[in-house]
Length: 159
Image (cartoon, rainbow, N blue to C red; front, side, top):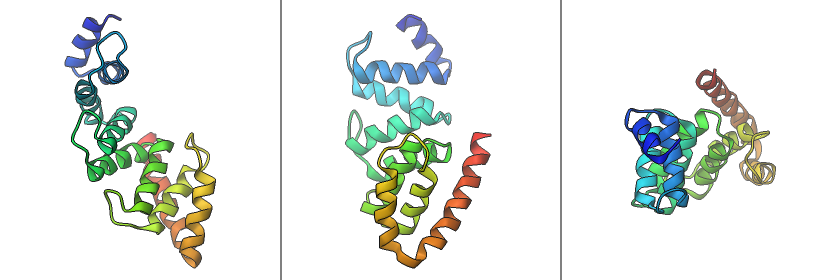
């Protein structure tokens, strides 16, 4: 599909075309690299609930790439992608809870999200989970209950 055809499809609300345009502008493939345009197209698809675009938009917001940096808005979009089963977003949500980046520090929520992220494509989950579990001590049972609730929420969004 040509860039022109993709642009036409994106303008009519096609989330895959919007996401693809976002990637094209993000990396400069078939177009000049333009991070503002990348963020624009990721946002168009993200607002329609497309998890890969939500994740990419969160990455841009966290770094301030093509948009004004906003940890709280990045957290918002990571969480939306995480609820749809995106493992890397789950990991990032957890790490943002640990570091109080864009959200109030909450190691119990970090533990829960890391528990849910186990077995996904997210890297370093086991190591991070062990560290956070040590930090919350006897509260791991509470974290496991929260993780079960999150899994139910994710199941609703992915079915």
